[in-house]
Image (cartoon, rainbow, N blue to C red; front, side, top):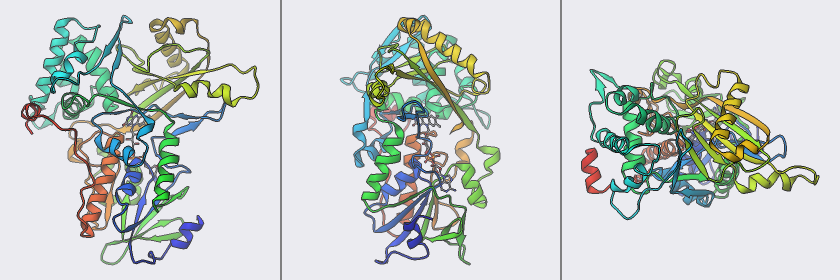
Length: 486
Ligand SMILES: Cc1cc2nc3c(=O)[nH]c(=O)nc-3n(C[C@H](O)[C@H](O)[C@H](O)COP(=O)(O)OP(=O)(O)OC[C@H]3O[C@@H](n4cnc5c(N)ncnc54)[C@H](O)[C@@H]3O)c2cc1C
């Protein structure tokens, strides 16, 4: 046990403050801790891994020791709570805002799609949708109409059963538009196949991520490794604000008194006392810790895999910040940051060492792909890049690494919203957070941050300190509100 936690266990803060213990140092736990600052409570955050950040994590590159994200994460302009957290903690400067979305069609044609800022929503989408060179005019019109139909809540269920995205789309959108827009966009936004996701989750992406506001579809791309942004900088910031962060400590149980109130958490042999507990761990860990407080997790919660293919070439193979590769196995490609590209040269004292250029291909809903032959997948991805980018044909692949998280995100299948648990539980001082809880958002960084803030809001309500910690969505104009029925 760390010295700090040792000295604090079994005792309340000297000034009589309420003691809150947060279990789990992913974005949900870190956001709950941030939301509780300045509210007159003392906060201990306990994380089982050596580093906080959870799934928004990086690994140490075996070649030069630099940090590489296990998988590229991006947020969108509509992720108001995630962006607010980054601004509040000084991390906003490590996010780059790409207003232009680059699409590369099946024929290799490039489209620079930039939403307009000078027209009211939803007209801002005209240059984005009509800028896609791989679609005919009629296909673009069908896509725009499809978005509007979805937004106005067309029939979303068949009897009592919510339709999947594929079921909804197949009778309403041209096949090419499904394959070259809906499939890549839905799969990357929700991390799950269009055959499995519920249509209401897709509606959320369309309304909040595209139609709602001219800045909604902006892409926010981290410019530093996630492990550095969240695992180091955010944790250092929290510690500076008085939060006690204990990493490398797994919580193995929750302690209750006779009335059923939580009194602390068990960390191996030790009990850390608490007036309130926020459990911000993934659903499997939550099931182990509080099985009776959860819905039937095994039946309802399924994870969806995401695969990142890391490639180090001897030269830069493309000149865009990112690109959506439609109609291919590779779905997105991200340029390594310039600094990352040269870091191997910088860190290597031996002058003979060659410069490596890192890029990353991301494949969401990679079920089937990640179970197969890795060399085959690598070959497919490299061949696709060579078809698209002339420079890739002359480049030498120096090394590669394939990273798959088999349960990267919660699969938002039809009906899942009714089972995702709320922040409050039957135990009045025990709260749930995590991207799998009821946030109204898919399993994303925004969902995780919201969940932490929701738990903090409920916790403060319990202590009679009313505070709404969740910030509002981007402003929707009157026309959008009318369109979506809000
Ligand atoms: C490959 C991949 C790609 C993704 N891409 C994107 C993206 O582009 N954009 C996006 O918005 N989101 C993306 N996500 C999703 C995003 O990473 C998650 O939604 C978010 O990080 C979840 O945060 P969380 O705090 O809810 O859970 P986690 O990050 O899972 O955090 C839970 C923490 O609890 C800790 N813990 C577990 N058990 C215990 C215990 N007993 N005691 C103490 N600690 C414990 C864990 O170690 C972990 O640190 C991606 C996820 C993956 C895996």
